[in-house]
Amino acid sequence: MCGIIGYVGGKPAVPFLLEGLRRMEYRGYDSAGVAVLHDGALGDCRAAGKIARLEAALNTTPVTGSCGIGHTRWATHGPPVERNAHPHRSQDGTVAVVHNGIIENANALRVLLQGKGYQFRSDTDTEVVAHLVQELMNGSLEEAVLAALREVEGTYGLAIVSSRDPGKIVAARKGSPLLVGIGDGEHFLASDASAILAHTRQVVYLHDGDVAVIEAGGYRVLDASAAPRTPKVDRIEWDQAAIERGGYPHFMLKEIFEQPQTVENTMRGRLIVEDGTSKLGGLNLSHEQLMAIDNVIITACGTSWHSALIGEMMIEEWCRLPVEVEYASEFRYKNPIVGPNTLCIVISQSGETADTLAAMREAKRRGARTLGLVNVVGSTIAREDDGGVYLHAGPEIGVASTKAFTSQVVALALFALKLARKRGMSVTRGMEIARALHALPAQIQDVLDRSEQVEHIAEEFKRAPNFLYLGRGANFPVALEGALKLKEISYIHAEGYPAAEMKHGPIALIDEMMPVVFVAPHDAVFDKVVSNIQEVKARKGTVIAITSRGEPALDGLVDYEFRIPETVDLLMPVLASVPLQLLAYYIAVKRGSNVDQPRNLAKSVTVE
Ligand code: AGP
Image (tube, rainbow, N blue to C red):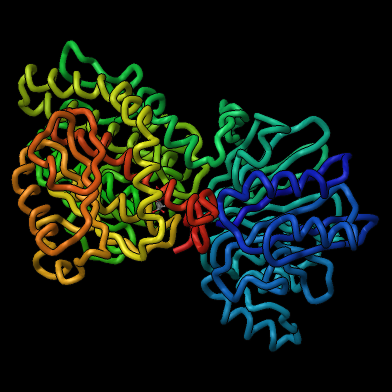
């Protein structure tokens, strides 16, 4: 997804801008550019493709100056070619704009501006902002930006510079994250903290509606009505090393191998094994409010939606409360039934996914209480929810989500356990689940210690054009997640299905060429899954089984197997998903894919 960077101070801006853009590469992008002010003039450089191409273009036509903005673009309006790369310049060249988000009334504004003689050079929605600011520039840049924003509908993180008001960057936020970094005689702007962490840890997160004026000697934040706002300065505690690869060939592999620690971190200080419950400080729900919950809606996208399906089973099974799981993109446009005692759980690694954020706002608008399960501290969802449970999984850089998923499942288990114990679950049952949770980090380590077995299976199947993933109960979402991981990074077509549904259609696909991954640990539906495996074998399908230790029923029945330790049924997904993450990773590497930045994908989908 697009990234914004800005610098104003006493040093050359371009090296800083390039470094910041590189640190945001993990978000996914298809073109990049910079614009820098120098001696009252604006210079810029843009290139389609990777940042290395922008750097090469800058070597040929250097741009100098110590106040500039940069951008990595992930195409939404128009193809990823140079003319659509940001920054976009106004007609007279005095204004340069970089933008994340979507200007929804861009077509209407384009017609209006064309009527005034403006000519458009790109297919983007962003270009209207550059022309509009030029049109309205009658004093300071911030006044022109505020006036332009009154005309604009949609979402944006914007950074704007102008040669008619040099030495400053004006930034604006509505629906797309931006933060100001505070330095000594220099200030920074970024859409992602990782871009500026090497230079400062003091940041101001902009709120929706804010406009910031950033200069070498200071910064000001104005609210939507142009009144100055005294912003809160936050300190970023993340370690820079934590967002680097730490010796692994890819972030994704590093993040898979971090899971014993990240799952431990999700539970640290929260799990109370001896009482069979958990303590969650940020819920902001009183005992009475927890007892009054009538129903739960869980909303999310992608991998987070898969963890929601597991959370649904935990809350229904342990708390005996009705739960609905909704794709956030669908929920936001439905007419959902939400009552005053509805709890809406919102799950997001990034805390910035546009559909999930909109779904949360919709649930709030309809009167539900919202609870965010979010990884990125200070993200928009985390700031706007009524209560929250941070995942504490640390920065997830690989586009394919891995450690966030296992932490989401564990965070859901902690919440469901707390709620269940309040609503009648016995202490004995609570302790059984708590003990199982406590054992998970060591059990994940046991799985990881045998990763070469999965690599061997990957070698056998690296050329397969299709995969089917099957599971039942809590392992059906694991099948969905396994299939999603494989298709995201290896580009192999893969489908996840409830194992018994196979005979209602997908069974037609099965022959000796079709690898079928069964997620079949020993749980309440294990015998049923064994029957489903027999159905596949009868049609000459090749079976790869993720099953439990010491389970003889599959001996001789499956072609390849990987055994995971046993745990309580609803926690099996935490262990079963790890070999599937590894399988997708090794197959993708063997096929030569760009594992951390797969094609067409963005880490954080901040557009609708
Ligand atoms: C997962 O591997 C994906 N890249 C994607 O499905 C992701 O889970 C989804 O976009 C939601 O992101 P979020 O958790 O940051 O909201």
